[in-house]
Image 1: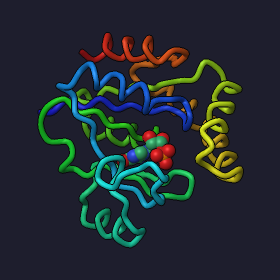
Image 2: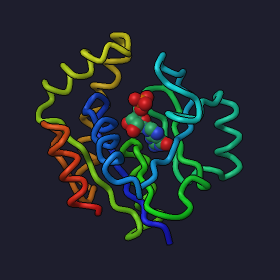
Image 3: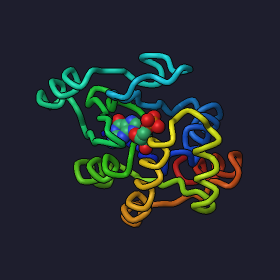
Image 4: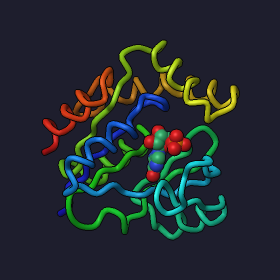
Length: 176
Ligand code: 5GP
């Protein structure tokens, strides 16, 4: 049975950067590439960052039971294909709703880790500083944070990201 390490955290917390740093030093782990209906950001590569699907392609795959989990986040659909989780040590970077679905399905075979910001103000600054979302999207994402913090109480572990190297080392200490 595969071991799944599920990492969630608010938008803008820097979880992608922490995971990238961790993977550079721990190449025995593989990162699952999710499907989404969100449009690609300018620097994103299809098949590398995400598989970009239309809503109808996504819904067809969901109806056919192809997803281990899927959720709606800020108006777009995101999901993990079952075929992504075969073999080895796999990291999923998904939202808190999806993480809890994985826990429900896989129990002890899934470890849920929440990456938290040092503070809400710090998170807001980072999200705006990224400059990849318009104001309405930023507001939507900040509103989601409260709910994510609540759901994260059901997670197995929490890492505070106030320094990328420290956070990557803490992740290593938890799952290696
Ligand atoms: P973003 O649009 O910033 O790339 O991602 C938005 C949110 O969707 C993030 O919290 C990210 O972790 C989450 N996400 C990415 N892929 C998946 C997935 O396959 N399933 C679920 N449930 N959430 C995902």
